[in-house]
Image (cartoon, rainbow, N blue to C red; front, top):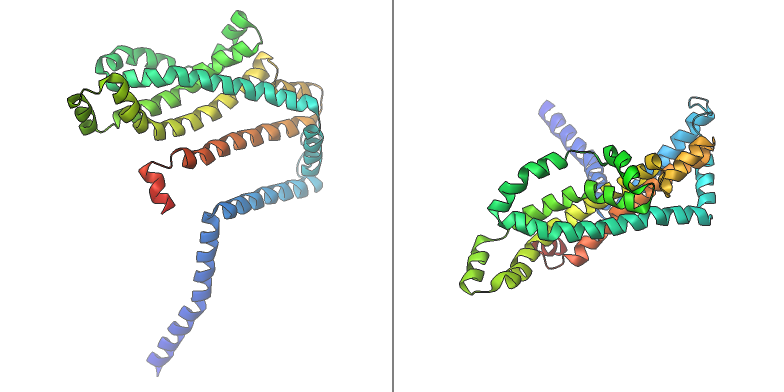
Length: 288
């Protein structure tokens, strides 16, 4: 009799857990979809704003140093309707785009040289190892002396600070080239240009997308920090001006806008990977 009760209890417990398991599987499946990820992320952000608003209303958060969530969002909406705000956004973004173009022009041939030539790698590792750890912020005084608070100063610092992730990824991509493919290219006397364009560059491209996405995020950070410290025009300068003027709501709205801009940059690069790399085996497997 006791065995029968135990079996019955076990069966009923299993039956009760089945709906829970199905619910968990449904939640996980929806979270994996693109729309599901967006909705879950938006829900988390809404929860943070709700907690922020409640804590501010209860006096837990200092009203003199932090506006309420509603006040900050209201200031953000006012900024979105301001032409001066969009001019600042363009000042920040345009120099990031230009800096990334310069980075690609420099990093692409240099990575092929470093990836294929052992001599080039051994000759430059000390220079690269010395320059790579230097934070671009430390070079702002030098940039101000040479170029002043200009877009040119921002671009130089962006190139210096954001080139390393792209260069590193591209070198890895070159070294991932199939040795058999290179041997076949030599046996068919394809030449340097055909070997590079048909074999090396396709191997580099997936690594390039990852490196470029990281470089874009770093470039945006460098641009805004340079504007804040060096006084160049852009979102960073607007944040400092708002803080100096005691416009706390506007300052936090600008900071939030900078975060949204970074999220947009990352989203654009991630969304571009699949259509640009549709031919790559990893993306073909995902499509299946």
